[in-house]
Length: 341
Ligand code: HEC
Ligand code: HEC
Ligand code: HEC
Ligand code: HEC
Ligand code: HEC
Image (cartoon, rainbow, N blue to C red; front, side, top):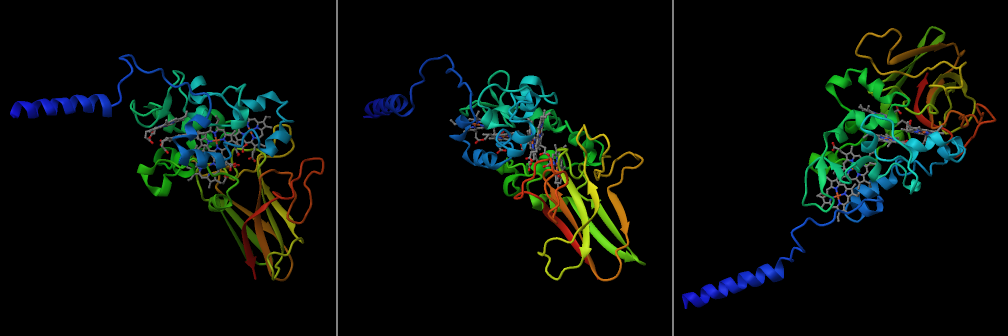
């Protein structure tokens, strides 16, 4: 009886091994998947994919402003970062190379995660996962973003602030943990200048009377890099006008100050970026700027506007340079508004 039971158990075990556990095709490792498109990652990483698809990384090739300014990419140098090959191909921190295929995917999964050995860079080693991610520390470093984001010195700016020693870093602010939970991974939405909530959190605007004058103070409180940063074509403008009962009334604004890094060919325009506090004492670098004007009697309002491109129209409808592109839908957004009685 015992023998029979033993045989039955053995038989069951053999059946179990052959039927329930799928047979290993052979002893040699299966051919690794060749990663040729971000669409392959979508199948298993749907949440990440959806976040990325909504991000400006995914739109870097179809972004209308980029298309116009690069003359539909006939300026070939623009392809480098707007349809890049892998960061790990040229090495973290180095300038990326242009891609010749599937450019419409922009800054895609492969640009950031594909390793020269054909594998996938991650934060953990997991040979059992279908994409076999490898733990690559460089993926999480500030210099990882630098290959594309230091063209206009955003990473250099951050390295000069006290945050370089204490944090937070790029990922903490631009790739926060989902639901604030480190076990949930990092959000791939990469909010930036298109996100007015983020832009509002970067600066404060104050205005007060001093005799007949109004003193306006604007300050970079985000502290990580200049405001605005990275893209030369961003601009922030301070305007004032007699206070309106209805803030939605348009027009009547007088320009007071423009915060901006000019294009390279605009040699006559000084850079007026609002820098973050530098850790070393650097003359002239202050996160705070004070402006003074004399408006005459009556309550006034002062407002800070943000533009994704400097030559979009102003809130009063004036175009800064008529020969440049204007996009009435994206003209400018209100950052802060203060009323001085
Ligand atoms: C070294 C990498 C790099 C190169 C080369 C490059 N860009 Fe960019 N570009 C970026 C990065 C990074 C951003 C994002 C920064 C930002 O949005 O502020 C950006 C953003 C932009 C934007 C703003 C997009 C938006 O969403 O509003 C425009 C317009 C643009 N680039 C045009 C160009 C043009 C035109 C060229 C070629 C003359 C070019 N870029 C070359 C990296 C690059
Ligand atoms: C057939 C399913 C599948 C495909 C296709 C796939 N992955 Fe994965 N991937 C997984 C699984 C399962 C894990 C491990 C568990 C997890 O993190 O979700 C993983 C883990 C990862 C990790 C590591 C997670 C960490 O915490 O560091 C990264 C990065 C990653 N995948 C990126 C990619 C990229 C990029 C692609 C496309 C080139 C891709 N994967 C394609 C299933 C897949
Ligand atoms: C601009 C670069 C960039 C792009 C584009 C990008 N990733 Fe990531 N990814 C990262 C970085 C950086 C991390 C986080 C490293 C860390 O947590 O320290 C990361 C983390 C991950 C992880 C680990 C788990 C998590 O959710 O944080 C997975 C999985 C992943 N990416 C998959 C993808 C997939 C799939 C795509 C395309 C849809 C993609 N990534 C596009 C840079 C990128
Ligand atoms: C391979 C090049 C590349 C890498 C690496 C890269 N980016 Fe970008 N990033 C871009 C380009 C190009 C754009 C501009 C897309 C567009 O046309 O709007 C951009 C846009 C952005 C924006 C602006 C979004 C907006 O609202 O306009 C943020 C924020 C950003 N990236 C953060 C990061 C961070 C943080 C890292 C490092 C984890 C990183 N990026 C790595 C190329 C890159
Ligand atoms: C303390 C939080 C914080 C840290 C750290 C930080 N940023 Fe930002 N970043 C912001 C805020 C707020 C804005 C919006 C205001 C602006 O554009 O300056 C922004 C804007 C940006 C933009 C969008 C610019 C545009 O014109 O659309 C890019 C790109 C960017 N940061 C890249 C980086 C990189 C790269 C690092 C790491 C070197 C970094 N940031 C570190 C808070 C942070």
